[in-house]
Image (tube, rainbow, N blue to C red; front, side):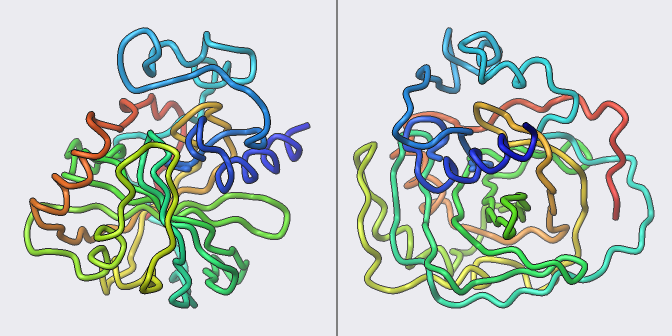
Length: 260
């Protein structure tokens, strides 16, 4: 059953425009194909995060789960974390406004290796302000690079953004952001994911979940330690299209270690 849930979640991360988007997703996304109907959720009011778990049975983990994301990364545990190996190609070919975030979808060919285990990059999407915190700090924006292995297991690389100089890697994508929810357009210039990331790929690691309904757990989170920058204009252009903040509140860490 658990493997079935994760596999369904992967499908939604790539396909759903109603439950994360597609986690994310985080954002990461939903646990059902886009053809299935789910309750409408949002980031505030009676459809906001505090109500997600009560909306329908498939969302119950949003309130009952013990390994939920995002978290405040602190009280780090020293560990022998092996370097992440990125073999990305300029494969970001379409950009989607799903009403919850802006998402860049990737064609096959971009890979990341974690401890020698290969994951394919499926998409990245943005949250403003950041969802995760580092030592209690929220960042101006956070981008989640969502990967899946051959068995449907998810690994999310999170990149934090301070306001500052424009991010060259975002420029190609942001200039084509669709204005209307549900709209997807082709990118004239393919996006290379590593152009958005810091040169230093040192990271924190913890076990978590999708940050949007159905909040499925079993997601490997890899949060890069070094932030990058995006200009105020880049951040504000994203926020203008969203019309609201799109970050889930911090969840309880419980007994989970945060490795560094």
